[in-house]
Amino acid sequence: MKTSNYRVAPLRTEIAEAARRTAQADAADHAIVIADSPNGYPCRHCLRWAQPGERLVLFPFASIAPGRPYSESGPIFVHAEPCERYRLTNQFPGEFRQGRAIRAYDSKQNMIAGEVVNGNEPEAVIEKLLQNPETAFIQVRSASRGCYTMGIERV
Ligand SMILES: [Zn+2]
Image (cartoon, rainbow, N blue to C red; front, side, top):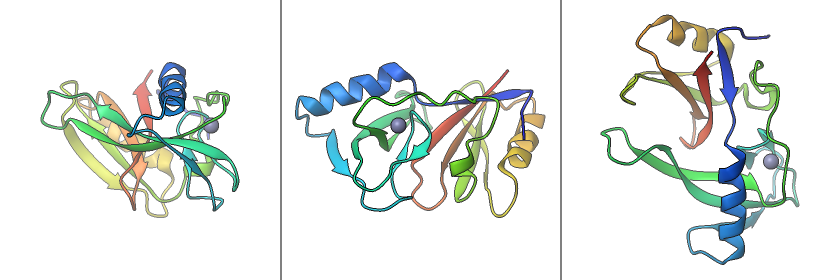
């Protein structure tokens, strides 16, 4: 299903590259892990599940910047080797249609709504949240662990 009024916002390449460099410098908050299952290690840059044996960097990402009531930093993975940033930004990534929670934020970065995609089409949930004119942007997360998966921006 193509989208027209929003686009998927994968993690920026500069952030993925900085995480890889920081991990190579043995920073305590940047761990190298090896995927040991086919759907436990989502890369936020290419928006694919890492396959068993692939190496990833696990590090904290501030999905809402510090200094606000809803400021939030949490653990995310990116492939440890360079990967191609997700390009089909007018399509919800197929590998993350299940098990997601979708949150809406206003222009002050306050969370104003949240829904778990529970057998629904994620596009339908996103469209509904965007119908509220106060929704400035959306974040998609793991419903079970809460980790940030991707952003959704209005076009
Ligand atoms: Zn990747």
